[in-house]
Length: 236
Image 1: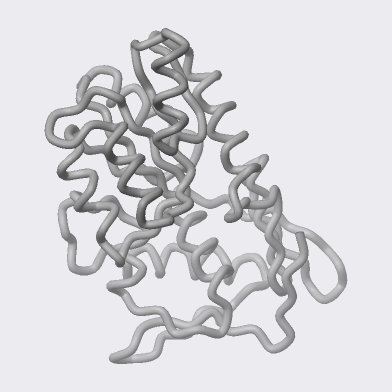
Image 2: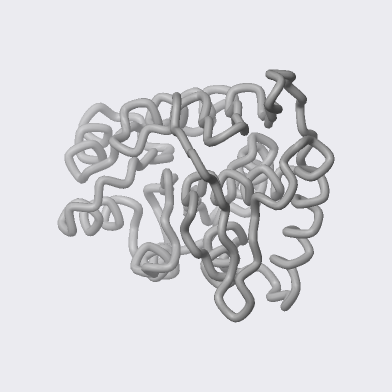
């Protein structure tokens, strides 16, 4: 789950990003609306949710919402603001925001509102994703494998390994390139490391192999990777 956070208060932005990262969100945090719009126009990156501060340098959060809705982009947006008058809330919602959170707020409430937005979104992510003999449990941040005998094993994964496996499970039997993986699973402004995807792939494969899931991710030299399934199934 990838979130675009647009917040120009450094302390608040850092706190929100830290909280979301702990919940396995991938967060791109920018400080002004102009840069945020450039991120939203980047076809390489697909966001699950957006968090806009109302008052921003460059393009305001209100204008960002209007631009999204003008382009018929359904991205769920949570608006953050110190404005608590009823007419301000109405203006934010009319501009296209899906929800409204008045500062100061608690991180528990922020997370609850994001979960509510996800449930209402057309791109709603279920609590579990099962493909083949692997199940991702989003609620408990677990990955479970089941062997031919029906025995189940929990596979301990880091946040990045979890995100990488999720990406493959959502694209079974498809060739995905290293560039696609890097653009979708790493922050836009992260320091480029040439072998970061290959390094994460080695770690993920090792853990999968230790839990009856060997050789399910194939390397296609010069092309990318493919998550191979003979009789794949998607159950939620």
